[in-house]
Image 1 (cartoon, rainbow, N blue to C red):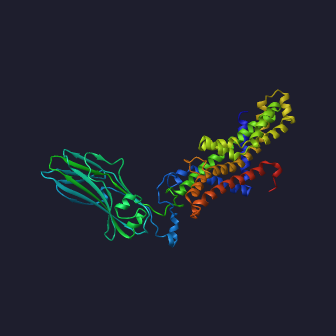
Image 2 (tube, rainbow, N blue to C red):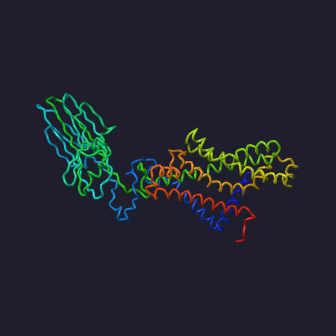
Image 3 (cartoon, one colour):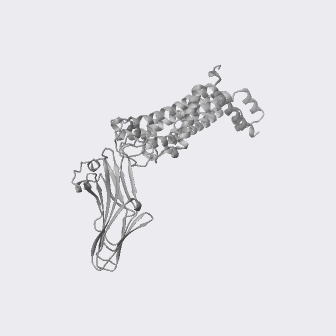
Length: 479
């Protein structure tokens, strides 16, 4: 007996899938839904980057395929350099100084002699730059300086960039440093947006430093100069530079470019599939479950129970859902699961009334009266005789409510009432509006999330109409 309902449910699903093959529109909806589900499950493998990671490219970067057009062909690309010991061309000047390779780090030891002296180690790296001038570049130089028994000695680290025409720009200067200084956790940095760096190099604060320095095509050089001054003593100095990080931010990036913070738009689009499916399915399941329970109890019990439940249902039914959700979100907070709960708790009333009316017609049927006459319990009658009759309505309602939940979540996110930590399609559209993408005509930022919402909602609508035709005998047509 316990296996009969499960076996019946499996057979019913097989029959539905068989009938679905004969409905072309329903089959199209199912294929689209399978595609979205695949994207949602394998989002970490499909998306090339973390959707919330900033600085992956320059602000408002164009998609990479824009390079097919002559106007965008020479836009700067991402150039990322992590330079270790083997990448540098070295030049040592001075005595009692050695340079070693320790796990890729440049390790310099300068021993004090019988007289004070000034020594230096020069590290150079050349790279070819063939694009238009970039708007932004930055770099990091982690280092550690240790001085032992050499009071008055110091080490100084400078960084330069040398253009193809020979102009030299000093990007970083550590100043004289002594006594166990470590910049490994907070390395020395330079950034093209730094106003003080612009003034130091003789430019205006409003100038674009990237365009001023990288305005030539050819071979550029990065140069690290480590200056060591050792006094007359018996001690020594140690300088360790694990690597140097240098980056030019590109204006061409990914399949859909980058937003105003440099986040990958394609990764946000991929991960948005998860949010829409989670919100749509969970909100629909919870809403249908509540409506089913309230409708069953109200329709089967009748009397004061029916009046109380229908008074609550009617009260919520005539309340404006969107303004109420907005008010609760503002006062309580922004959370994805709060959105799901609010959407579900405020959208079950219509289904509850429909199920109540259907149950009231079923409870007076002959087979229900016969079951009561032989002493069957109310729970047995509901699960054995009434609930199976409601299954077509439940399936159809479950599928048809998902598009509404998806659109409502996108609306809340577009109004900045969604969870800001969760990448969603509505959040993408809000960021586009906030960052001025509409005024910049950045259609590759605006249209993809809009189409994604449209096609996902359309998939559930097509599938719902097909199920309605399959499960509702009055809508069936001869095929």
